[in-house]
Amino acid sequence: TLALLSSTGRESVHAVLSCHEGVARRLVGILRHPVREIKARSLCVIANVCASSCYVVTGDDSEVQSMVDGNIFPELVTLLHADREKEHVVVRRALRVLANIFAGKRRQLHAALDSDTTSRHTPEGRFIPLICDIICSCSYSIDYERDIIEEAAWVINNATLGAPERVVNILTDGCMEMLCDGGSLVAPAICAA
Image 1 (spheres, rainbow, N blue to C red):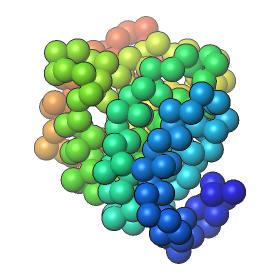
Image 2 (image 1 turned 180 degrees about the vertical axis):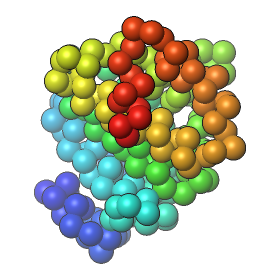
Image 3 (image 1 turned 30 degrees about the vertical axis):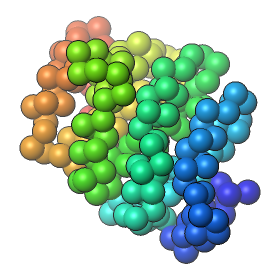
């Protein structure tokens, strides 16, 4: 499958994306498929493509940019609003894609932080408030929700490391409230990331 092929290194990712013009847009388009397993597999491939940070290298900057150009951000926002109990694998993998993008090039991280699929007056279309909401509404005692919290913590971690000049904005976009919430087990998850 493409997920397996795309996980074996940079050459494989390049082969997947160059086999046909428009593969990136098609992979992003598959995220609207009604079948959860198909969305999850597409997210595996996209996560491998977007793993171009200094820690894990499968994709490269142009391949990650092809996903950004394929309009991935609105699709990720939609997936992150999914029912976590039924769609936890999809939510977790969508968070992995976002964490990988946030760990990559600054221009792609800034594009994600600047993207707003609704309006600047509501948190539903912006990633940081959405991630904070996901973390705060999950329970660390439920296995699949713990996995979601940990992936979401990586998103926040990579955002603050990749855009230190925007830490104040990130904190005021919901992270400070989340971290200061006395009943939250989020701080240990984010610190562990």
